[in-house]
Length: 90
View (cartoon, one colour):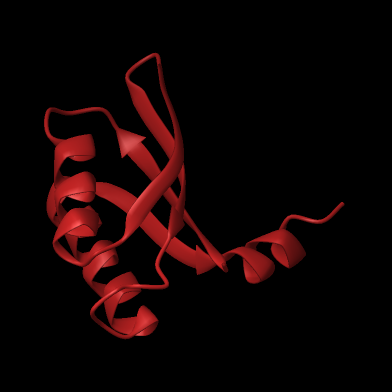
């Protein structure tokens, strides 16, 4: 199974988690792990998900999540695990 990393960062507001989780559910993406925090009004969430059974192309899903982020006033990125690992290697 190839994992997908989803990050959400921005000012906290009602509905961020609901919007992301609803979208993932609608497209058959299973959340494997989730961590979120709010620090002085700033929201951060990282999810590890399994998108192997997703009903759409990965690039389209990532673009749609980015659009949801724009609508919510946060930044949402969806990346393949291997790309995320390479980008964050020390």
